[in-house]
Length: 304
Image (tube, rainbow, N blue to C red):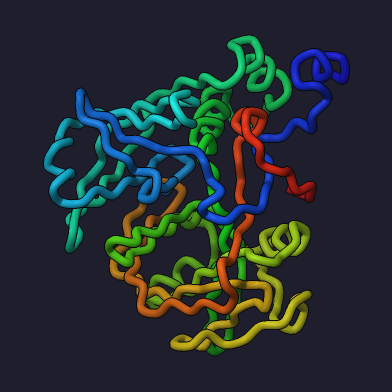
């Protein structure tokens, strides 16, 4: 394995994705929705919403949404003029919003273009081989993470329960002040969030990887109790949910609708309050292994 790694990847650490710390302005990749001759920039409004089956969402303003009505489309991941990956998608549903339309898509097929065909085959079939994930799923995940996905911290609290956990299946649509979250249906906090219709999302400005890993380790079944957290918290402005002291900004969100997509629950929320604690906060990001090789991003070694 060491020799093969040296030949193909210069002895890089092989993993599904790398972790880096970025400001939003540092992200150089772009994402486009292509439907026939029509092409729309969805860089800021695309998000993953389910990993089983693979589903994505994209928001378009009203004047652009009418231009793409077919049941099938493509999502292109690019850097400059270079195509990194292409995902073929089929339309699940269109959800009207005050200023546009939220499109829900199911992933049908994928093409990866980073490095050579042989590099990709060695990575997906040899280094990342797994009984839990098929060869095809590894290719789809690589394509989805061709665009850096920020890691957020989600906070929920009620009288007898508290959970603070990380996730990267989310998206913020600034034009609508709308937030999208895709939470696994097995997460015990899901029903509580849906019942209360409240949640707080935070960036990962100053947190280290080990802390994030520990928060996510048992979050779906047995979350870490507040008195055992390795960091201090403060109450959010409206909901009084705990906000970690490493956060640069947070949003308090009212859940206005939800839809089961498979093993994930899509939650659509309205941002009620935005609080900035530090100027120009950054966040941790997941970047697919292949995409990272062609980037200038700096890797943060950790437990993920």
